Image (cartoon, rainbow, N blue to C red; front, side, top):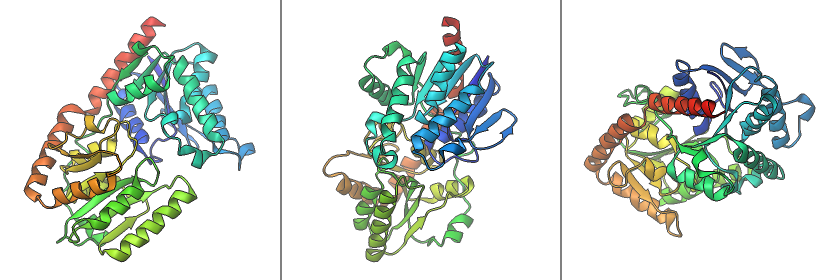
Length: 383
């Protein structure tokens, strides 16, 4: 079975959950299928072809530049029996390959453009193009994979023309041999954290979706003994970057022990930070699943997260962490939940242990890859 896996992000250029998903899915798929990965970038290595946007479009809208990458990907897919695209950045390439070569297209939805209207702030008129590309690909795909049950419902709500039988749930996974508690503290020491004080940890991009402004306001009022560590980079727009910086500076004036790490840390350092955090916080206002919560749980850390999307399918409220409704009292709810975990170290330890057990038992990447390969087989049988 010759499969083309299409994505924007692929190591070493991974900055979000979709990239993490593709990285580990590809690793586990390789023993099961003949896999060729097509991603953004330059050059080719064994099993990976990278594609760049056309130089003639330098300075053009990002959506147009993305489409030029999609055209390059589509032209390189001859000989594949099936293509599998991830995110709108690659969906059009999958759709074009389906039409050009007469092969099935499987599409994994990690998020949905109609549910991210703030993307217009980033893409301008390109948001209409990204939305068109996603809708066109989704409505003609042979199968769609939703990364959670909540995401499946979102897909059917956004695209009612779809046949529900074509939309399958395959949860995101986690490598629990890689993401596991690390007793080392060298990374914490390099960053200047006080080992005598607990800390709240956020890891994610600076976007409206991730709810970072809500978090910065919420942690103003948590236990003053706690440190706050923000591994936050890759702002979507200058506007959200400016808002983040203003809120961060304001927070730093009213409490000490606030650390902002704007660069992407090596994975071992992130794992060490996750391991030693008193609590991990995920304040997303939209989240189809939230791989980062799985990463924290696999490291034995309790999670405080928003009750949106697929997060409740990962974080068991009261067992592996606490869930906070996204309503008018969201920020105050985050404050209360964080303080509750910080005030009960023994309860936090039990939540962390339960989270590790849940990650190991229910979210292995090997199972994700087998279910995905099985779906490929069924689609090819029907083709």
